[in-house]
Image (cartoon, rainbow, N blue to C red; front, side, top):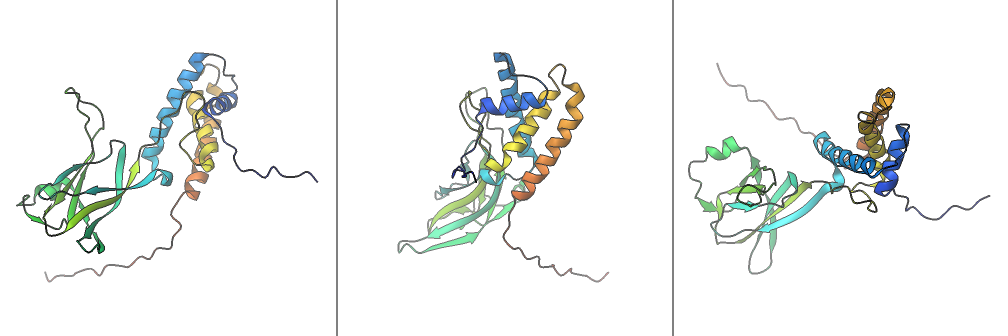
Length: 241
């Protein structure tokens, strides 16, 4: 009986990934333009995945030391969304307590009558921005707006778990910013997108789309939170008419 390899390191660099996608379209990767157009489609595919839902491998924890009297703080430029957040409260004796902070909408934040109030922050509005550089050559960072503004009675730290943007496709030797479970899905998705613009591959579009949808369903179903959860019904309030 043949021995196993003893390794679990299989991966595809961008060249192999694109080559596999072209072969599924019934074509061969031959020119530099073929590579450039495929890499462009691959970058668009990663953006599509951000819109499809929560990609757990892009969840990162971070923290922002809060400044007395300051309400607005920039987030990393590649932040897509906020998942969870707490205010970490500590004092001179190094005691630490994480306290929930509620996320609110821009409409709720706008109706706060005194935005200059100070205390322990209990609410936060996450302002999603483009992350682009504007005409003044300034990066438009996503921001958090906390209320009330931090006072000086404690040391406050805003601790968060965010969804970040996936890393770009590389220059030919890099792997992709996906777990190995998503490699088949990425190949299938790239093949489908290439089939829509490669001459001669039009007849495979529907087949490749079905392959991609199936691969996405398998991968996204596996890539989910598996911790037990408990739903508690909220008692409805019935007022008198």
